[in-house]
Length: 151
Image 1: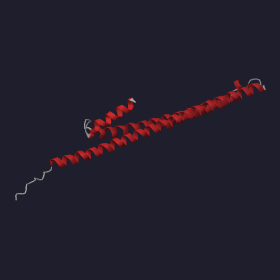
Image 2 (image 1 turned 180 degrees about the horizontal axis):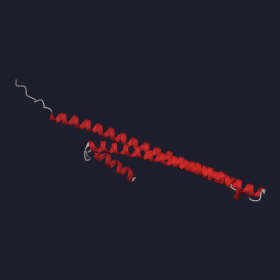
Image 3 (image 1 turned 45 degrees about the horizontal axis):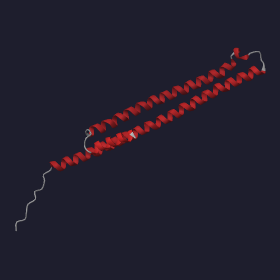
Image 4 (image 1 turned 180 degrees about the vertical axis):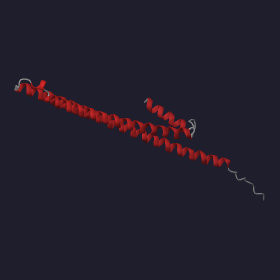
């Protein structure tokens, strides 16, 4: 409820002429676009690093099966236990990757929302700038004088 109230107050202040100049909206739109661009770059780099780490973890888990310390005395129970541990490790890696992808796509959706907000601010600023220009032109132009007809 508080968020709705804040949004309504901000919109109302803009309609009443209590907000800043159009430069504020246009500057905010440019800033949001710059922030989302940098966040996308950082997010992509982070996701790439996570994928590389997951790949490394998978290779390490598989290579551990070839390690002589894992070979034991050749009993079937030890080998089955080793395979179970490997499957569990690979499943954890798969789960971690799925979780990171879900977070990645949620964050991309949030960035898309910021882009929409920036577009709205840009449009609002442009419309307001055009309206201000029109109003200024109207008040600065010579007003036709009205003369009464004398009969």
